Image 1 (cartoon, helix red, strand yellow):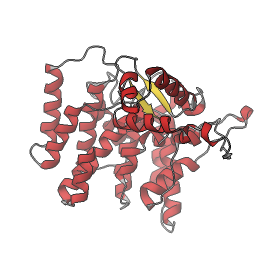
Image 2: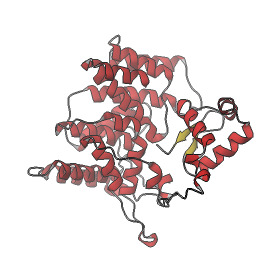
Image 3: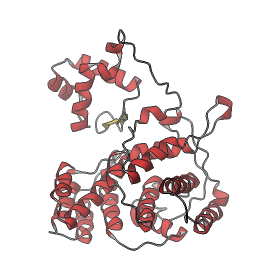
Image 4: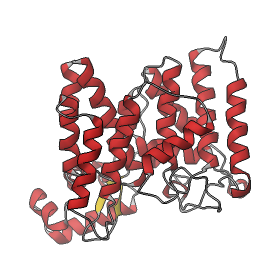
Length: 347
């Protein structure tokens, strides 16, 4: 990913545009806790350089996994690689139609051969336990009315006139539309990635200069913000909160610099007033924990022994700090102890 930033800084328009698309494509895999392989990164670099076309990228990725089949792929690396390449392809295309058919077609293109229901509207009801909701779920669209609800939302958006609206007002309306579209959740899996790609293509029709770094670096924040914008629990005095989604959109489109922290969206989050006497007990101010987090940013698959070697601490000490970081909601384990990795929740 650092190499992709080099292409963007060097300023060759064609290479910079491809690099932005690839950063977005790879970053969006984080919404499902997926990390593309080094092979995908290297192949993407060849595409940016102009050595191979995006079609050749897809062919090489398919060939690679035919020759190196992965059994019990808990980290879903093959999915991450293939979907990243397909997102990069869609983002490179200048065509777009604002319609339910286009939305469904994007899902089909992204997940064909990966999910058996690619491009199909789900025919069953779903719930999803959400970290940001402390294990609760958003109420998603009913399977009986998904198609009708989808068509209604698109029709209402088509009728809406943006004439006379300020840029801020237009952005707020688009954010609401995307929030409703996501909440319908017409696909069993891959809904957020599909919605993000559709959003980027739709925003381009307005002439917005989309800051792709937002999707590359804050895709999980984007998903959590959609969750919070669609969750109500009046019994617990919790109400839908769209301010998090608006912060994301304002950074995305207006160049604002809101600090985006997943932890602040948690329904049990209480903003702390720092007591200087107790500051050393806060994980953010603990030098060992900061050191661990720094190494996990560089290598999310690092084990206890590796972290001990990097920090100079014992493995017992590392395990204790890891457990505390998990307790504070700063990191979480994705996958098994053997083949999984650490996701840093706190951006």
